Image (cartoon, rainbow, N blue to C red; front, side, top):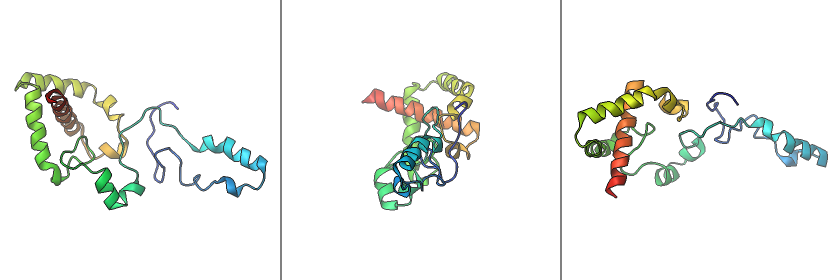
Length: 159
């Protein structure tokens, strides 16, 4: 359990791999085999030591209507998953305004926040599944986290 491990291809969010998901109690023929199957079930799961921000499991993403209704952002995207989607470009502009308000127009505050995130970027990256941030370099991810974080806090302060 030491270290943080990403999901493997075919692995579900509960860390059960496809090779092991076909073990069902009905396949066992005796009570002893059923008990053994239950007792060995834990071996098929590799728990993640900390929850991570990840994409919605492919089974739900494949159902486009369901995904759009329940998981896709409607106006503003937060975080790296939908960040580059052009349909949220207007939301990005609003986040910049909220960020400006949060730092009270202070370039110095923005620099301080940037440096703080930069100092902790390796630890922050561990909060995401690898596939979520693999297309982002550190500088882009730092800026994204800064803007999204400040905008979110300002939005909360306004409420």
